[in-house]
Image (cartoon, rainbow, N blue to C red; front, side, top):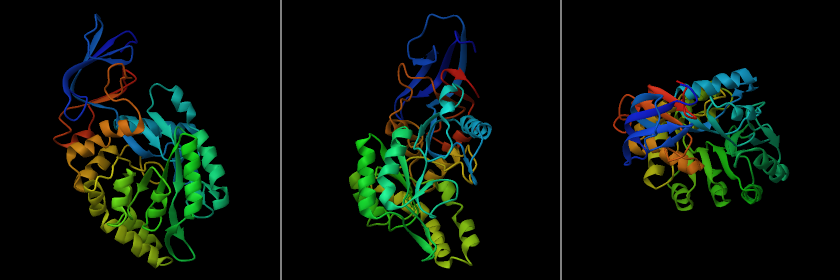
Length: 362
């Protein structure tokens, strides 16, 4: 399609869960609901959604640490082909700013590099520091990121042989306050139970994974509006991880299995209590990219209604991240499907067309 051509998307355009229109037009890379006076028109038919959101993804990272730009490009292209056109990069040691200059790659909202306690995270991933330096590093990453900072809230403590919180409450509170002063929100990797209350009461904005939520902490999350990104396609790996650590860390292995076994109940209880839930795959690291459809399906399996699971990667997720959907004048980032994804979220696994910045790219 030439830069001058107009794209006509017709069928059913899901501007919102209940705001369904018959057509939209893409003119100059932007959405319009008024028919343009153009002759060079390309038509795409089907069910259109805003470009999907993966709110926990790592571009520029693999199991060993940072990757070259050509690998980062392949990761981003894989996400794009799956319909993911907006990524919240939840921590990466790679500089991926060059992606912002590529109109054919997904848009990225970065959280800078992970901030972890010394020797309490995956090697080559994070800044590894002690609590007295936490405020300074949070300030640094708040300035480097796109409005987010990522902490590692808990990890295995080799002395106790189990998961435990990484940061004293006072240090976390001071760091979160500094991020907020600089206009950034804060999220944290948390598998276990014992880090959650301190982080929420310290003012955190979001928790990744959140497998350690309990009937005591879920109401706290709900009352404070703290979001979770469950990454259930990643939590599915817990039994394998537990088996690998069984001999050396039996307490940790048993804990990981227990968190896995109750994962669906945890997510459903959080949703039922009013905790905001969003789609994230944890792609990068050891997980493949392009898993967004699988994560939406996992949320449905957990008991979240299909339309709400869809919103967690579409309308609701974009609002949460402050990015437009299929709004008049917005950049034309959308995905077209054969059928109605509200009726069956499995439709998301097979995009018919992917449109990014007004151009058909897949």
